[in-house]
Length: 639
Image (cartoon, rainbow, N blue to C red; front, side, top):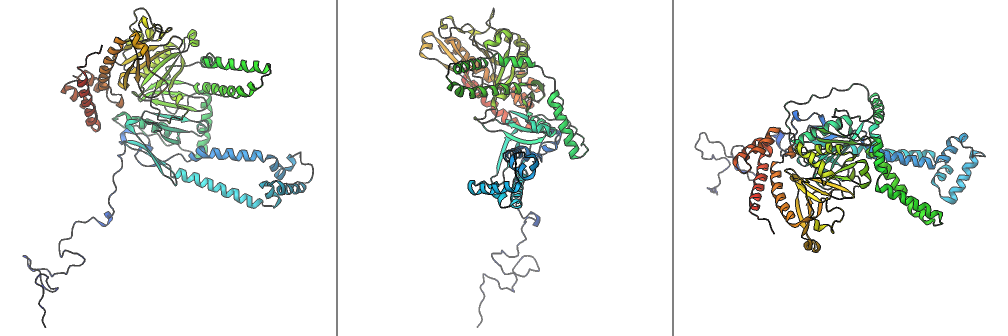
């Protein structure tokens, strides 16, 4: 019987009707094949794996000078485990050896142990008896002659510790790209931290004493947030300086015309180089700064005598002397509990007092192309660079005991990137521990370079020691004397084109300088007594720090006018501010200042001044600020 084929399915030997001749033989479809269709364009065998997503772009070669800033992953210095955990291990071994000193002398150097009167075998038998009653593991090892097993156990423990240190170093890598600084660490639990370059608030270089002897340093990239810092610990000092310069250069928006020449490779063995480094660093501890790069001379020099005297002539020292006298008098009267209650506090304060002096020694402050370079510390050297525009508030303070000597202190509010519980934050906010009025003026010129020169003479004359004849500050009215009975004549404010100055205090004189481009907001507060006297309290809102910018007992009408003026001038200062890319051409900044702030000419000048990568973002922020300014312009002062 003949079976008729299905007209819809061709037979295996039949030809598929095609317009071309000769027709190719039909191949039965297999597993969903579509027949003799042309082979689709598939990736080559070498491209079978999907291409990975491109990582962040590498920095331009002409913009970096260190081989560690090439956008690739690198490891830290090989001696990093020794400084991060090895020192703790050495201390533990030293404590164990100190506790077993007598026993080790009896076992290995019996002639150096005069207390051993009989035979060593008798001592060992006595140890066995002590083990049976006391349970000392060393006695058990001695009594059972387990020296070899104990040595192998100690060796195995050391090998495990060394392996953990090696793996932690092996898995701890970092890279510097054109956008951020990244660090990866952890063996079992991996962590990755990233600091965007456009949010860098500064780069600190810390050199503890042991690290200085080995020629190493710790680099800390300060981020804009709590616990946002990225640490590179440790690098060689030369690499740390070069990497810090690269990070600041990348964060500044600078485009170099030609690359920096790489340093020549140093010849010689590692042992000889380490010996030379230790000798050089020991000399540097005595002679002064051992930075491997040339930096400008410090604009302020603090004599050691002035530094020590400033700590002695302080209210804390007066309280310490009074507390010590009270303890001595109480003990003499038979009140011995005072000795146990206050002596630990006195010892702790003395240690803090001594540490403050040592930390302030070898202080220097100097301008650099990337910001203000501040160095301090005798044993542990800290070098920080504060880029322009990262200072949110400056306060000049003079305690009453410093007034006869004419000494002042300068502190700032800045984003330190550290956690709230970090107790070392204060050392990064004091930019001048003690100095004269001339020293303060030089430091303020570095921190606020945009202020005209003619303003500084007025600030020094009226802000430091005012009020003076013809005072330009708006002071508290006479009717507010009962609110601030001692300082109402000195309390006042002054608004300039770049700063808001707040002057207050009679016993502790304070002058606060607030850059308008960094001011977050201004608040006016009024309590029932303030309303009765028609005064108000002003408080400026800035980042957290030791500077608390507030001013009490201001005339109400003057406070309302200040509120309106600050709102207008802050918008203008923000539009003109270019310190987030501080290394660009100065003529671009002047073009933005002179162009019409409300027209297209301003946008053209601003677009020409901004690099291509950030042009759209800056114009968007600028337009939004202009819209906000236009919306708030018609407001009338409130009565």
